[in-house]
Image (cartoon, rainbow, N blue to C red; front, side):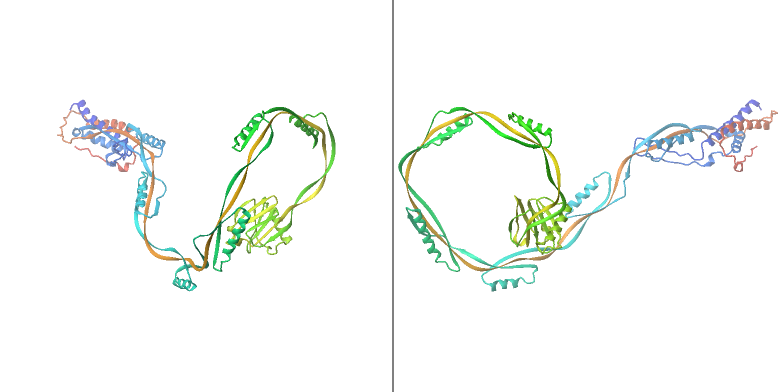
Length: 635
């Protein structure tokens, strides 16, 4: 046998097999294969397959055994190279950093044994539920509103709805108030009608006897006339007295008088009246003349002279008598007078001392001059406070200015001590203040609205007569302690005067009037209207009529889940590895020629070489020799 040829034939397959073993061992036990269908879509679908551990030698001894088998069986081995592409895809992360951390960790695991072909962060828009599901229960009067509300909720793209509209029936009783009002000529008829209303629900009846008045058409009584108005009025009175004498208990008359007069006029004498007026401006004077000329009639005429202009000078002199608190105030007063146009030739300043009495309030109240009134609708009295009482319980205190809590307490104590109204003892006091209208119905059913006004020491109270039982009006004032105090003041005395030059405009003229004498005749027409009274019995009130009704309602119910869109991130790694696979076992064994070559030496050399290569490729393998696979050389 040719030694070179034999070594090439036997050792080369051995080395190749050993390299394949080392490469396979470095890939790991499980590889996830991910298929990325579309990286730009929201989701990435991943298909994972798992390889078995039988394909990968786990120890160096096993790899060397496989190498020996490859040497002895190398004539049967035909190999090919296969490229396997794989990918890994993560779950969703909330941040790009988390996705990048995932990629970096996988790259670290793969870098020694695989070729990384691609890495990227895939952004997806993902909907996530916000909070718990919301229970919906809402009632509607008609189905259309319920369906509209359902459609409105379902139209929100962020809602996941499970809703339905259910029709339900509801029975209820409706009460209708019936009001009645009838009048009868006799009391018996009224009582009969009241009996017919017995048994009605929530009935209220009011009875009233009224006088019904029948009014007849107005009729003319007489016409009278006289040249004397006084005599005419006496005749009118005589006729009316005669009509009134015809009245009875049930019959009365209303009279009406229409009066008129006619006049006849004759010429009289002409009178003249002098006119003399003075005005501050020429325009006023001219306006006066124009206004008088406008008053002219056929009987009244005006004649005016030319307007005369004259100049007048006035000197107004007055005393200076001012008291101030300091010399600075003296100068201020003098300068102020000069600024107003006054001329001051000289003035004197005298310092004076003065003792004054200061009033220091103590917080106590003095009540006096209290006047009590019985029930009425209008009250007017002098004072600065009013107390309104209505039945038992609360009383209302009115003052022009509001009182503090301390002043209110002092007022109450002082009023009770004065004992002006024994019916007010331990009542609750309600304080109000200021002019205006007050609605006090919140104090009870027997209270109403009160109009209270104060003017120059007089209080006026107006209200419905049945809304007040007592009214107390009086005066009160705070109590003070007097204290003496001495102060210094400066009195300014002297004379001041001011000169004024002004123009005046005089208007003089005559008013002429033609007088007439009038002859008057007076006329009167008298009418009467007959009125007749008859008794009527009035029954009025109300009752409630009930009837049962069935109404439908529509209920929208179900649940709503709220979602919101968020950006999520997946990590993607694509990598590949290259493996050699066995393709064909067909082989016809070749007889080895006897060349004197020791095949055992050849085998040992090849194993040493292969072991050295395999040792470098399989550094991470497990060294558990209990799981080694033993091979037997075939002869």
